Image 1 (cartoon, rainbow, N blue to C red):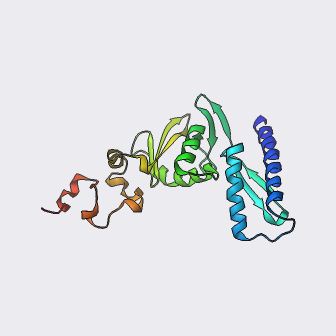
Image 2 (cartoon, rainbow, N blue to C red):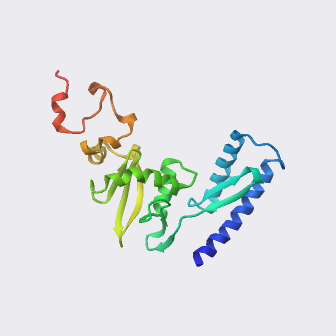
Length: 206
């Protein structure tokens, strides 16, 4: 119940903020193009994320003059690790506030981070068990811990931050399908490294 009251209070604040932004940007009953809608959503999402948090999905109904619906994670919890945010689509997955902040910074995501994290997590969960404490997806690596029958995602490391040794560790032969396509060479001569020693016979002879 306290959480519901907190969200309702935040919801009222965001609605007031968004309506003011809407009135400042558009005339009453004006036709709003798709491009203008997209630009407005990007702008207010960035502002709302900075002002109220990155755990809110903001839906704007342009046919009703800026009416807004807000969706927040089903459950949040304060712990010694900070606040935990429950995933929208994976009921036993929780993201720490640190993870959300790092993910936002490292992917330059200003939209709802939990929605984007959930999309990445679809791939990452397939790698469970490959590396203790880590999950991999094409965009990077998640550090996690298992606590009380739930998976707590502690932080996110984007692919570009990984060293060649870490790439070999996390994206070995069993994980080749999770490598971003941009990092796969069509010709062995164009590759910087080979992921497994078993393929040494493919190395061009000098």
